[in-house]
Image 1 (cartoon, rainbow, N blue to C red):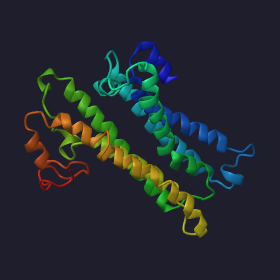
Image 2 (spheres, rainbow, N blue to C red; image 1 turned 60 degrees about the vertical axis):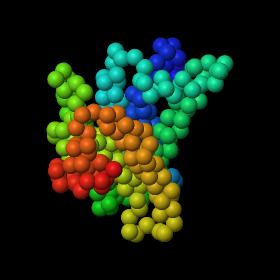
Image 3 (cartoon, one colour; image 1 turned 30 degrees about the vertical axis):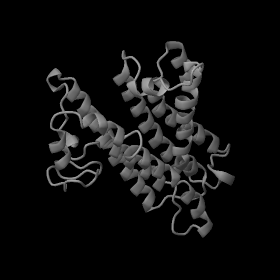
Image 4 (cartoon, one colour; image 1 turned 135 degrees about the vertical axis):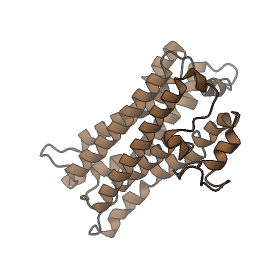
Length: 266
């Protein structure tokens, strides 16, 4: 659907808004298919209904907030320069929509499925709740706070014409140069903790949980080394005051302003 809309309008940044919505939709589908007709959940009806519903609900809340935020941010704007650069590399004779499907839409869809495997596991695997589950919920809540508040502070900062071309250095952005990316990081490590079996589970139960570790590891890589922090700071580093800001502000993990050792967290 996203590709068809993008093809019709000639703008492929819609895939960014669809990113959050796709996670929410996948969580709902997984939750529905995991539910048995007798009210049980998971494989062979041995899953935990509370944990299954919790994992799906947390993902839906995160995904809808992110999708709405990105859609509002991009309303009325043209193509994202990232996609313009990417699609300009299409081989001669290859239609732009076909190339976009191959290098933008399908890779994003694959990433959604891969990153969401902890949620799929949490609604299917036969373990109950334990204290690590609630630790995961707390980490998810911390992540959502950093992501939502960081996005709101950035939107407010950009709404003031006097701040054009300046670096934001207020609120959570004093504690980390990327509160939204740190929030994303915390959300997915928190959701992964929901897949871990309790201490009474058999040893074999840890295999599927370990397999889902690919999700937070992949998300961490993307946020820190891929299209997140690294790419964003290419533009930030061209603004006045960057060196001073970078020297006193953590590159990723939140840290008290002004005491971050220079050269760390980058």
